[in-house]
Length: 229
Image (tube, rainbow, N blue to C red; front, side, top):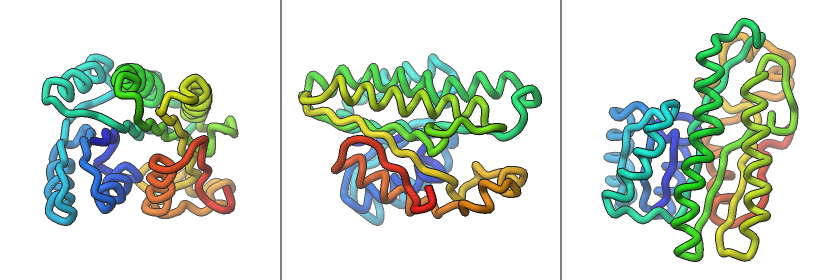
């Protein structure tokens, strides 16, 4: 089964649909259980696969460990992990709430590292598997008003590339998806008014999801989505 975090909306939702259309069984994780339950019903009905849903807020570190323990206790075998859960904010660093910044670091970095560490041990015992971490175009571009977000995504890309090098020849691939602006609820009004967004229009999450799934299943390295990007 493939484990996908942040599966209730945006590119996580679209990646769940894309993987389901290719007949992969899934474990879907997000905070909003009602959305996950509806998605489970839709995917199982349309594609005749098995879908497990687990409600977890990954901004709380104990929940990250609990997620791993719950999956193991259910006897579910994870052969691939997509660390998609994450969030960002936009504004001057001095004006954003510190608690939001720390929660962002927790979800975008700490939860990703913990899940990768825990499940990678199982994948190494099996001798094969896949991990994909969702980074960003801002992994390459430290960007004003995305101070903490761009820093977290720089970490994700660096972590993914160095881990991929460590695992070369083990049968386990580690990839990084680096989308630019996406047409999701992540975009706030102030962001959409910036010159960067006007010059590089957000793409539909389905486009990013398909590219991400292709990368996850078939390729190595990193993928930047979008011609302008």
